[in-house]
Length: 448
Image (cartoon, rainbow, N blue to C red; front, side, top):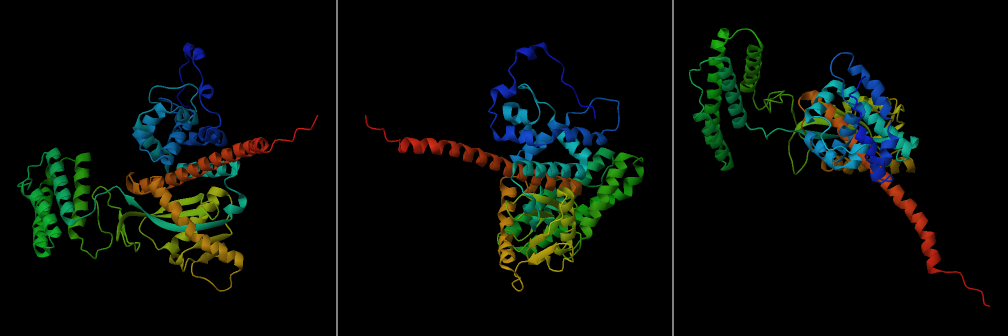
């Protein structure tokens, strides 16, 4: 793949290089030497088959920005803003000299994610595993014993209430009708917002009978606008606008027909694939997003598999796919997987699976490994607090798939950086201790 070359500058001969002004023992500098950046140049060329047009961005720049973004929990705009300020970020992404301007527009990261797809971000995760093995943070033995669990990656949506959904649906229909030139009999722009706010007040005061009455009226307003547009849709010529109106009408029709017990309910008009998941938590009863399956090593908590599971499947039905992904990413089939009781009935035969609560027939070593299962819980917590797993901001189910894997990449990078930092401190301590002991216990001076 041809990437965009930097124009040669005569002034570069007089400029100091980044390697001359940064600390060569910094964690990001040592990590940059562990990652095979040339692989991205070779393998990502298939995503840009055309030879004409503007050259693509350097793949190392994009891959490095994605790593840094999810390592430090930054948005597309924030990671580029910090890149301009931080020489270590620039060295990590392959720059030779310090740059004072943004290398790309933030929207380029979004287009690259859409271009490389789920396969491309899984390769990013694979390279973090290889870097962990190269520095010693991950051993072949640790890859054979993993813990698997699921969590909920919430979507960037408002808490779904019927009043908000009805009002948003009505407002979107009115906006599309105005753009298409449809003259509505009545748009309810004055009455509907007041009713939506009133429904919230009745719910807060626990006046549920009044609340339900307001909701019926608000639902009727949305249905009237929907039927009015349906009668006048024939006047709109065939094209993109008519297609958008028809799609939105179908979505609003689903919304108006759903009941509290309906399957596949709509919780957000801009994200209709969002699931309502109950994990039995005392603090949060329901979470709105998608289920994510996570596989980590029992020793070290290194992520070796991460995948979104749309549709809220049963945990036991996701174990086979998770183990297959681990084998694909690490080239090694795990011999042991420890899981919680939600994985009963998994049906996996090729890997030994230990379920929490099992006591009979376990050797002392297996019992000790089974007790290590709960170690995956704080790793998930760190991915949500230190990383970006707590809230997915990418659109659609494909956005969920990309975002989950990238969060796993960020977690692994943080693990490697912490390991390299601890390794350097241990090395310094081993050099300082003999000198300190020599100062405290000097050799006896022989008498004259």
